[in-house]
Length: 48
Image: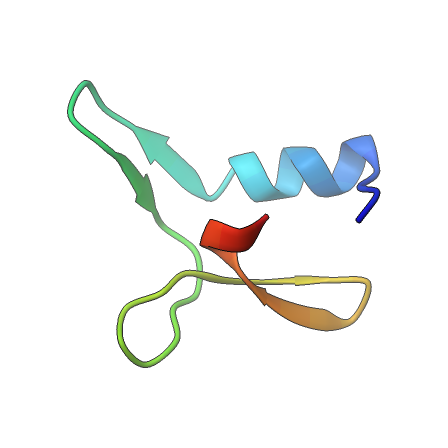
């Protein structure tokens, strides 16, 4: 999947980086997986 610079920035704006982990601060699905919509399609954040 090809992402635009705007989509990439939007994705990273929902990630909080610490020394120990990268926490997803955006929407979440059942089970706690992060979710992000790109091109009007939902994706699990860990798959981007």
